Amino acid sequence: MKIYKMAWRNLWRRKRRTYITTLSIGFGVLLSATFTGMADDSYTKMIDTSAVMGLGHVTVEPRGYNETPALDKRIFNTYQVKDTILRIPGVKYANVRIMGQAMLASANKSIGGVFIGIDPGVETGEYNLFIRSIIEGQPFTDTDSRGSIVGNKVAEKLGIGINKKLVYTTTDVNGEIISEMARVTGIFETGVSEVDGSMILLPIDRVRATLSYGSADATLISVVIEDQRRASKMRNIINSAIGDPETEVLSWKETQSELASIISLDKAGNRIIQILLGLLIAAGILNTLLMSVMERTREFGVMMAVGMSPFTLFRLVIMESVWFGLLGLILGVIITSPWYAFLYYHGIDFSGMVGDDYSASGVLIDPLMKIRLFKESVVAIMAGVFTLTILSGIYPAWRAGMVPPVESLKTI
Figure 1 (cartoon, rainbow, N blue to C red):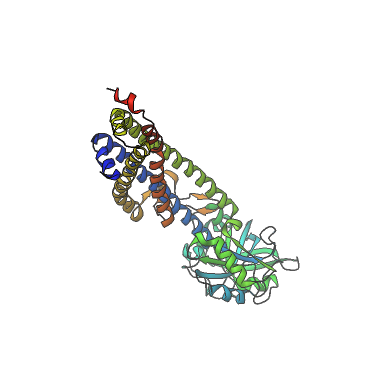
Figure 2 (figure 1 turned 135 degrees about the vertical axis):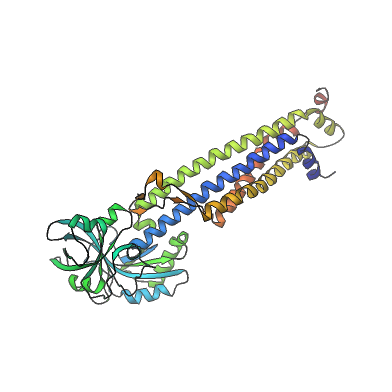
């Protein structure tokens, strides 16, 4: 009889034990898929939200700007660079922006803030989170207008509303302090207090005139790509395509280092949970196979006495662990599929526990927890569980192959 058939029959000599072990592997797959899928989904949402809030998945900026941001550092041929970037496969869109710090003031109060100069003809709600989050008023429509879109908490702090005046003060390319007036056309609310309390959007050509910039000057080009996981690779591709030593191309991990650290720390914690889960599964499989081997000591002795080699016994027990792995994976897919579908389409709402203003490093985190598994994550889970099952069978298989034939025949 072939080894795989013998191993299959041996599994069902203790049906209850086989059911319990297979079920433990299946639930291990379920838990692993849940933890990994939630992490994949939350990381992607955080990174994508951060991208549309200003800097993109990939950022093109003047060399040294990331370390020491200053408005006298700028890219001169931004639209030419943008056209080059848009021709690269995998790029969704690219926006030319001017970003800087300013003092924001009304007739009653002043606060420190951040401004972003945008082109309203290009940056619609589809491509700009702030415009998409407008709760009152409307976006400005002219690149040279005196309109502005402010965060709801900025409006609250300064005591201003729609059609009210706002003065922003900053420094131009020559280091001179300059002030400019703007009129509020819209108020946005992202749900992140630190953003809503400091950010304003301004027409890019008006900002250029205020800062004494040229007609194609800007501090950065924000690039959003189709798959955030390819950010590092796209950074290298864009850098090669531009070929300008005066600019540098950075991925979100470099421009959003705090967010990258938070995700890295969370991944480490998730990895520890996965390892502990794997050890529990391995312990269950090891216990099942070891008990099975010890119960069959006499049987193994007889098999060796009639000519079966120790290596064949080793292969037999390993094959049993292979069957456990296959059955566990099949059961895991069966019980995980409806659970995955529920979380993928509906999710679990944690807003009652964390509130609506739940953010990390200035990025809004969606309290509706959903799940998303990338192909490589599915392969990693399947391969990890199956490999763990095989490894758990090595010691029991070795014990089976080391059974002394004569002494084992004396075993009752």
